[in-house]
Image 1 (cartoon, helix red, strand yellow):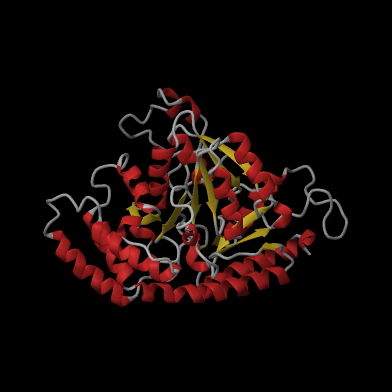
Image 2 (cartoon, rainbow, N blue to C red):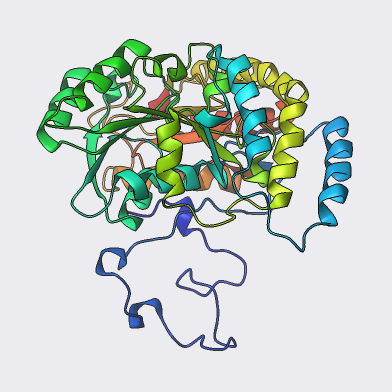
Length: 422
């Protein structure tokens, strides 16, 4: 997977080639190329958004609002209780936490579930990794609709699962072409199909009717696969959750969710899935022992018990999303409609002509280079957003109103210097 511009950004203490200076470190003269690395990982770049010290960081889709004082106070109390028992391993199956998650999911989605329908892990990435360990593997395929969450192919590679891409329709807001999707499922017979809704990085959703069509496709005996619906940004969408389909597809559907986005709990690293109990049994076969620390379980339990405090910020973020989208469009940017806490907007006009019918500027530069240059222009103005590797587009997280104003100011300056947007 090709690195994006912001993945290549030099960090403090880096050498001229973008790698950290390890010349004074034990073993620092050994290069990655010198190691007996798996061949499929050679030349790859590690996943990761840059963590630069800027006032306006709108690149990782976090909730910009900190935990409420009530959550912080109760978290401190709970950690004090747990601390005296840290000499013991944590509760292995996280039953209390899963009970709290079940109560939250039941209330938030309207679908009654119990702790037996819930599995929790260190972020949704670990949840997805465990599912691929159980249902992917050598000789099996996973299919995803790209552009989408960039960790899906990385997790597939780590589990020796072949990853197949089915392109989304840019002309239709990067939606899934259902006819092409069902044909791809019939052709490739994937063991796992990923559907991210709202989709990261584009922000659009996939309807329950379309998800049902794809569930029917993987239910074909010649395919015999499962669908993982990634609802990491589900709380920002006022539509129904895919959890509503669990009763009709208990042996085919898993709904993955996280507390890193709508919840102001990204630092807590807590993800979970909702599914039939048999899926929980499946991942128990591959999970690491005592995978969730006592501190993680305690912190997440407190956050869930006071979820009303946390989720009060969701409406603020949605209002800001609409304001920022409207402002970007008035500046001349094309913005993909979003049901998430970020916006995907076009910074480079189509290759053929700009809105004035003229050939685009910098005609000798590739769209990838122009997109990287656009990202750099925002960074030079003190605003860190995300280049996710889709030529012509950048993604911005909705932050605090003051942060969004700084971003819009930078966007206005960019638009005034690039007439092709207008």
